[in-house]
Length: 168
Image (cartoon, rainbow, N blue to C red; front, side, top):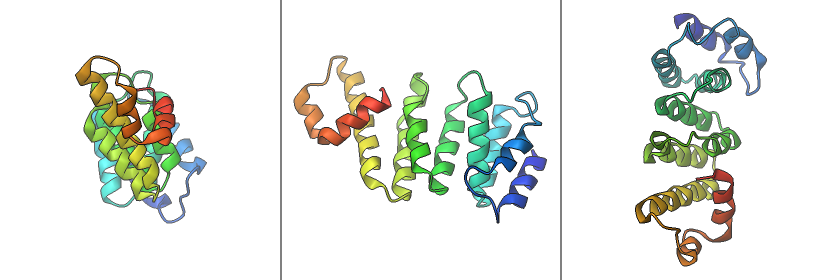
């Protein structure tokens, strides 16, 4: 773990999104080498040290290599890191691909996504994520389809288009 953190520190001044160096470095690791708890801790430490890009790279590596969904804590740390790296499209993609299990659909995950997108100065999309979460919550609580009048109040056509992409 310290080795990965040291590598992220060495890249920090010159690292850019899409840089293959981090992926090449992580290629020498397997998930047996890094437990999920260790990855969460590592992502938190990177984030605290301002190494958001390293955190984002680690999150992407986890998503690519892990065959089962990683924990909500990993997704949460990854979403925050992507937002701090000003990668709003990646945040939206991550939210669109959240696992369907309930623990991945909690308010804290959506809150992180809304904040991450807003941090990237794309508040309209952040609002649409909020609409999507509210829509999901209403649907679960009502246990019936949400009436069209409610859908219109949730933000109009823009929100509805985003809802179709998010697959709640």
